[in-house]
Structure formats: C-alpha cells, structure tokens
Image (tube, rainbow, N blue to C red; front, side):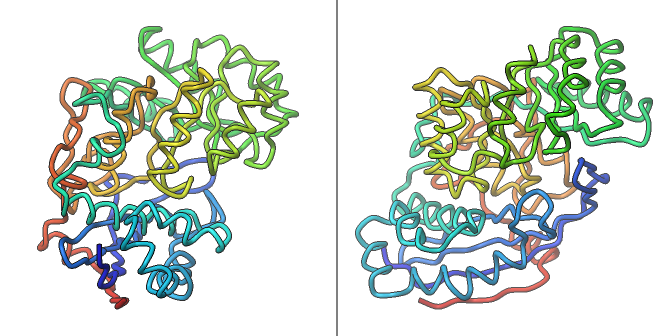
Length: 374
C-alpha cells in the first residue's frame, strides 16, 4: 500500500437536542475527520475527541495539532512509508508508539488507513475484526434532564422506538431518584444501566449501594479514571457490577483492572484505546477472563458508528452497546443513516466501513480542510 497523503477535515454537526452528562452539555459536535488517500483507494477515519478536555485529556484542537506536527510526519518518514508498505494499518500503532497518549488521534489515523486498505481488498471491517453476527442489539444513552418528567418522556420515546437497553447518565444529586422513577414507570423488564463518567468518590459507596435495589446491568465508571484500586474496593461493596470506561485505555490497563478485581464489565471505545485493532485485543483479553464487554459511543457520525457496529458484532460483545441509530443525535448524518430495526442495527458488509460520506452533505457541514501530502 502506498499512502499519498491524509486530509484533515473539520465538520460541525448540530445535535437534535442538548446531551448533558456529569462533565458538561453538548449542543453540537466539532468533529475531526481524516481521509487517507492511497494509490488504490480512499479511507475514512473519525477522531472522537470532544471540543474541550472534559471526558479525557484529549480535545479536538490538540488532536489536529499532534497529527499535523508529529504523527503524520512519522508515517510519512522513510521508516513509516516502508512499514506501511509492508504491513498497512497493522503498522500504525507501532510507528506512533513513541509519542505518548493522543490515542484518539492515533485511532483516527489507523481507522482511515484500515478503511482504505480494506476497500482496496474488497473486505469489510466486520470480516477483518472477526464479526460473527449480521446485526447487533442497540442501546441508547440518555443524558441528564432538567426534571424527572422530562426524563421519563425521553425514555418512553426511546423505548417506543425499540431500543434494547437504556443507559441513564447520573451525577451527585441526579442518581437514585431518577433511576427509581424509570424503574417504577417502565418496570423490571427494561434493561437498564447507569453511567457516572467519574463523578463520584469512594466516600459515596454507601450512597451508590442504594442503586443495588434497581437490578441494574451495571454502573459505569463511578470513580476517577486513575482510581482503579478504588473501583476494586467499590466492587466489593456493591451488588451492581462495576463497568470501566475511562480507566481502560489499552489492553495492558484492562488486564490490570481485571487482575485487581476493579471491574466485571468493560466498555470498549476504540477511540479511547487507540484504535480498532487494540479494541479487538481488549475484547480477546476480556473473553479469555470471562469478562463481558460492550461497545461504547462518542456521538459519532455514520462513519464511526459503522465501524463501532462492526466491532460490536464480535462474539464477546454480549451486552447491547451504545450503537444507536443516526437519528438519536443527528437529524441529518453525513452518510446514509444508520437505522434501528426491531431494536437492532445492521452490520455493514460492503468493503471497508461499508459507508462513505455523501459529498453534498459533507460539504454543508465542513468548516475547514487541510491536506498533508506524503
């Protein structure tokens, strides 16, 4: 494979409604897209970093800067081009390893090059990663609302659409009462879980134990991302399974968390862990240790959503992921929309991602374009 260059494209995508979590409220997404151009095909990658360093230390401006100044020049170097020529996308992680962090940028590069590689070979993301299903159950993430009646109305709408699982964002002051209200209104048959996005400390263990009464699938990332030992201690005090998100940034950190008993479940987000190939390693590790995994989302466009759906079709993904339909967040996506069918979404089977941006729609939301030649 001969890589001719990579395009860095920023797009601005308004959300259908504000999405509030414990770390802030999003009303639109400023997204960095990458297009890898080779002699044989073009491939797309999506950087999932947010506008501000709130979910993680990475943010979209920092990712574009590190790509421009360090990561892409490394790939364009003689050593980089030789390695890409021999091994394609599989060489990306090793080439970029000397640069610390910036996993979301690294993941976007790997995704774009892998997409181009697979399009040229006529193979799908799902086949490459090891998918065993042609469709996967879809869960929905429900943000923090101004009132419980507003929350119940939103959850009712998503259940009416057919979503297979509901995840409620929580924070101190918005936890037990809204969860109790959802359980009372919709009953015990609804698959329900909560996500704290690091909003609590171990001092809140007794309070969080009140959530055990609601038969939740899991509580996601209750404590700070560095507090793996705290999660292990909390796991011994709760009946609700602990799921880690922000704490798991690689297969190595996943192995440590599993060994310490810090989680029974892992949320795998490819951007957070440095790419889809590392995400597959975490899946394989978790499966070997009997730890369930599911695929998280970062309010992606149809590009990232299609790749996530392919990942979620691997055999170890036994819980519904945040692989919702395009319409959950965007009135108009930049690809053909991902749609919900009887609580499931279909795994794309076309070459590469199986989807591509629609040129007219892409241009409408583009705010800047930069070409990095190799």
